[in-house]
Length: 87
Image: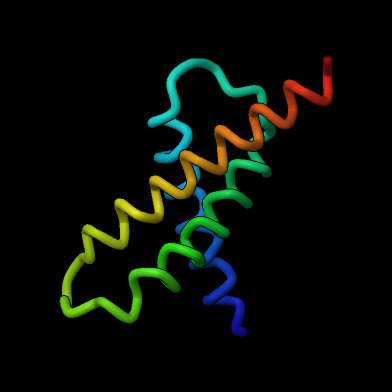
């Protein structure tokens, strides 16, 4: 993988992770690096799920929605895991 691909993955991860975090109500007590990691993983999984079904040359809104939903679930899971570790 080239450096451009890594930078692109980080940028997409930041955006997807931030959107996923915005969807989840309340304050999440997780680190920003964890949000980025969740975003990158959600983007990869969302692309793997929806990728074969893709038939558009523009923005694939369904893929984006799936990625953000996966990021939101990841943020919820990470937030609950962090809360349970502190208890």
